[in-house]
Image 1 (spheres, rainbow, N blue to C red):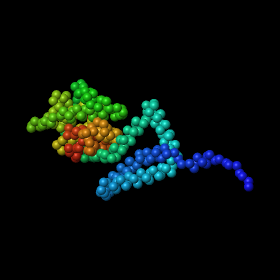
Image 2: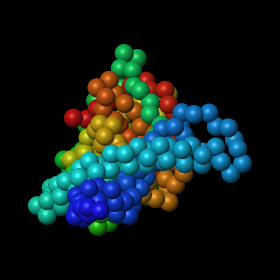
Image 3: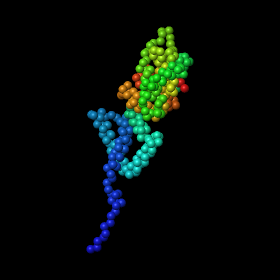
Image 4: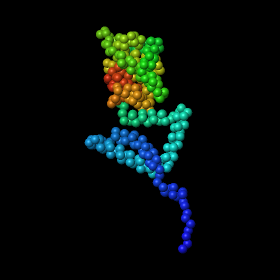
Length: 310
């Protein structure tokens, strides 16, 4: 009987071998990162069946995770190569000081937090705005170039949030939030004289941190503008309050995360972030004296007028 030599096929054997367990771990982690935002979208848009212990949501999460996991497993070789390349790019960005691991982590956290936190927007219809009351007096009272106002704002930035790191693109907003914290923690509401409106200048309000809503708004706007922020005043029925320009909706994700997880954790816990979107799509956040954190609830929601300080 003829015997044939034994032939070894190492390449074929390697193809048939079970993939490394690290493959499954990597795919599992990637599936989890993808599942979380997908689940949040489904959770917010599907009807709540009100099952005990939220079991309906548990089943949805498991189903979504399983579907993504098995889909990725079918393409794991290509995906793992892409992940390896992606990690190299992030490592290079971290080393040279550009977009790296820290930045991608912040972006992901901001996105997830904004999706789950559901900030509360209000649109401003410019066509409905009326002339701003006492406009010229208020503009003159916003003494953002007054040394006393500037020095106060600088003091606030050294007192609050000075050691917050990793958000260099939002340094000005963080510093303006420090001004908000200092003013609102000291503000004492005092009515105007019965004879009519008393418009206090920003430097005057610094003496006792007292006055009504327009005095508070003037001081807040002046201090915010003195350190590079862009404020505006909103007029509603019987009330005026300040807002600060945040930027785009992408900027809102970062700022929302900062407020809820870094700067005003206790004050904003379990609460919504309130803001307005103007006709150019820019986000403005509430800084009213009635709020304990930036983006607190609006005292009056119907807007009658807006005064932007460029």
